[in-house]
Image (cartoon, rainbow, N blue to C red):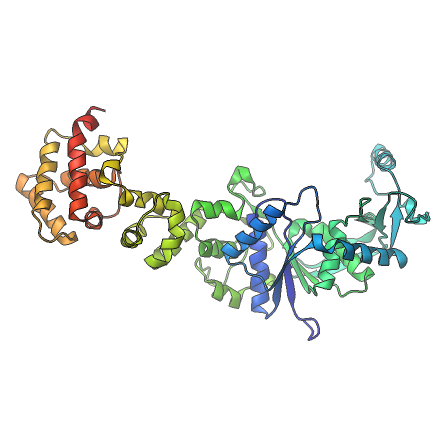
Length: 472
């Protein structure tokens, strides 16, 4: 970039729904490229589509970007606040002969299209209004851009040098008959006014870019560089959609994915640092990322890989740092001291915050609220001497002066050996008594978390319910 044109990128979503995972990746790529090269990033909300844009979607997009850590330096700016600016600039093009008013009716345009199809050719507007003199007071009209003949070339950081034939591009509409700008007009006017030097967006916008290049030139403005990021595919190799999995950032947040893990995953979706690393911090990515290194082919969204990566981040966190993210998933109020003690037991097993909360649920239940999984009952609560075994275990635990992992395990194993049983005949029913589940963190750690009194209460409850449990 020249000194008078410092690098500036922008992320410009349309608020017609939640933040799509592909849009989130584009925002991250913009941010990282700006940080790598000392540039800035603008957040612009492109809400001129009055029929589809919603303010609550704009707020959700902004909230999702903030949660993800895809920060911006300027904005958010709303296109709906700049309508008069777009009208002002389009009339400049009309005055300079680069755009013209068109009064062709829908019926006329459909007739042209039908005629083209009957000839077996591709439809293009006849441009007949180029030769008409239409005043502003002559009734409803649109304003079309007068596309010049000749090739249109631009530099793309990912695709290299790109060329389109100008005679294949229609005289596209800039201002609708209701006075609202089209996407092409508003985006170019904004990019000029905001000093955007590099436009990085999904490659579904590639066909729009030659139109935008022509508009920059018509406004006598510097043409920015471009980077068209390949799309994200589902594992079925089709464009990522609801049928192939969750598509919005909010859905992954609700699944219990950490923002750092999703950020890391999206960074590596189409780009990779040397050495094929799977875990990379944002700071490291800022020092290494460049749009020129993004893969030319589409990336495949692998949910299993995201969940694996999330597990790595969960394991690496300090327990205190997981309390706040975990609390919304618990569903029941729990004291933070118990949660802090439970988290280290859950980190090795849980892949998401939601899974961690489900595994933590027994720690916040009263003894008489424990529900016993049918599979756990069927597999582990059996044997004619089960009640005797559990009562003896309760007595062994009750006699302990020190109730820690070492003493509880020693007491159980000594009892098992004295009775000629395997330790498993006590461990598995104990797990059912304490958690109601087939699986749990190490059961002696769980017992210590409940404390002596809590462990005895849970044993008492299960012993009392054994007749009903074994009969069901």
